[in-house]
Length: 549
Image (cartoon, rainbow, N blue to C red; front, side, top):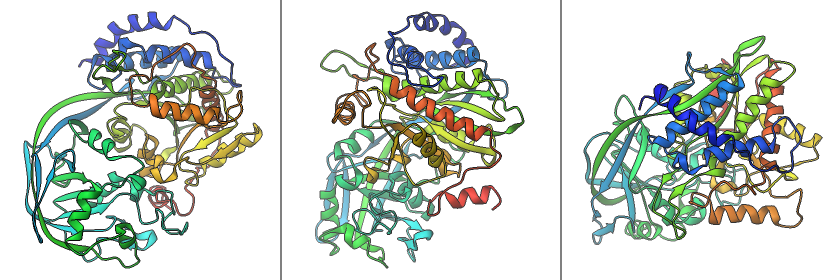
């Protein structure tokens, strides 16, 4: 895909559509308006962009539009003269054998793919195999020195397959000071468990799914881990990862663990202080065949250079991608337009960029606007930027992220994802107080929302990162209107073809968040200090190290 040439051809058609301005809605206070946000959403969520999936014509149109808007606003190309950062990826379609064979024990088990287990491999080779790999129950699969916790202590897992629980030992423990209580730490995220098992040298890892601590049912696991998956390409072709990564149902795990005498509440067993991994005296055999396809997607970067400290950066992020085209739904609609998720986030950062450019005083620090690819494939575009930064991370003051802002108007409260993590939320709190707004934390803290959007890849490498969203207490309607709208979106539109642009969409809440983050960024851009992580954050140590503390 030759982006530089294709973009010029695509801009004309997209720009024509952009001229159709949606009807006005109530205006939120601030330089970013609901009207301009809706104008951008109308373009980005139009059927002509085919759901904005990476590697498609929809990607070409999306990044062409975003880069043209950056140029129109007056942002400089953010990557050495280009608005684009190449993001090389591999698409791996893993096909596991129909059954996972469990040998040894009182009687063999044969688990069925999809209904009992899902499994895949990141290794960029045609086939991987576990053959009679010894199984070990490694509790939560967590190594957390700051909590004095190590499920792998004294355990050699080379050649073995570890069975671990989802979430972390603090969940439903009853002690809010044990880990973070019911608020998930990164140690509870399934991505961490795969990473840690690989660091320990395990051949395979199987996560035991339980609905409550996972915050979603088995169907989500099964649907998300079947078929083609995108990964960033790696020099070692992911050979440092476990051969097999996967999940098993709670029912299957109970059968597997019971044979080793592990019965009852397995979470309670695994979170006891001094827990030691338990050999299951069983083995697992499984073959996975891989189909590989390589291609390149793109992040889009525009920069406004700081007036006095251009070598220090505030980054605004939003992902431009969505799910593309799928099977037609009952209404015959096959395009996942992703109007809320996340055309509105991209529209918001375009509004913020324009506000900075039009401000009476230029920011002292540089402001970077980063529209990333492949969030829906596992936060890949932001991961690539964070591991291949255009601007040094230890000179990056903060990342301010916008993802899936509510389309039901302004709210009296502001939702801070991962509340309690870093100093940036104190900036939000100050402005919220001025505006008479209430700050609330995660609605479901056990679901680990802080680790599920692009800001996390900055946090993971120590950059203070903030993700805020529309609250649930509507300004214009009393009662449960806001909460009902959130539920309606989650039930009927989230990751479904119904997430479409509508002229009736109320974007004032989106403008409210955009203007709040514009004020936060303005304050940060004119300071000389760097915000930090709060004591107890799992990201504090890496930031302190990068800053020479």
